[in-house]
Length: 393
Image (cartoon, rainbow, N blue to C red; front, top):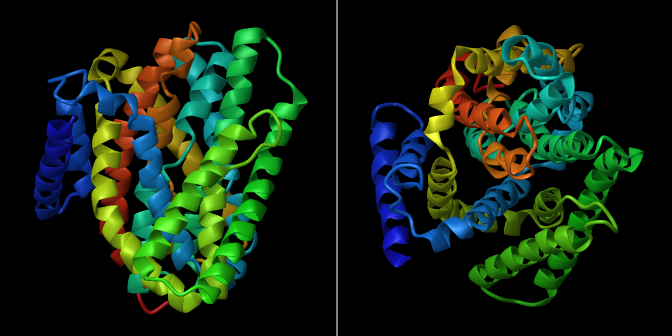
């Protein structure tokens, strides 16, 4: 196991640095390392790590979403207003609708099977988007219209919305029935996640102001509380829908609002944690990718992914109607809201393990969506942000 950890870190660092030197996103090199070392190629990663891979990926997401919360100013979020709310669900709905239209024509699946495929591919990747939006916030790009905050907030809720839809669609595909309660879970999980995280953040602020301790200890406490919030999501399943990741981000936002000086210090330490977490996240995402499915998919599956992205971009454009954003800023938002990675790696194989007829095709399209959109989206964000966003605004 320790040998595998060493290989993940060293090769992840090496190839991440090589790709950065080539003016490509470092995550592309890390995903490539994961594909090569993973169980579908060299099988060089210990099975004990692969068994806990979902938990390790979630740990990395906790770190970056907490960092996002600590950097997100509620005043900026309020300034964004309506578009931030629409970005949470309109682009995802547009993409799912696009897959429902295109998949039966391109892949010969039923409309319900197309809905399952769409609900897997529609989730945007916070792991790709969030660190880049934080960097843009730090550099001052898109400040006038709070564009990084808009994309950051939308990406955090988008996953909750899509995963609940996925649960409803696979339930319908496997049993033939779906409950209205399944869809009611969407607003309930979002609201309960925000409120729970805000309460936890307020409790931490009160505690940190009363009890003096080193910032390193505060990081450990905040991380532990974040893990508890994720654990509550599983514990309350079937009782109260709760978005643990949204709660984690809300806790960070509340700390930023009530104790900004501490938020700045903690944010700097989370940046250091992200250096290692990013490597594990993207290497393990790559390890979950089976290239055999991508090779066997054919041009029609590729066309489906590209066509679905066009629908998603149209959904982003619709969300930004009647805003003060310039054409260049709108184009940036449309492009930056396309990367997929973590959710697809996490749930792409579920329909196949459930024995659904469309399971193989769902996994194939999920793999393709990662391979196409994660590197392409990251490259576009990194290279177009300076061209499409004015640093003075």
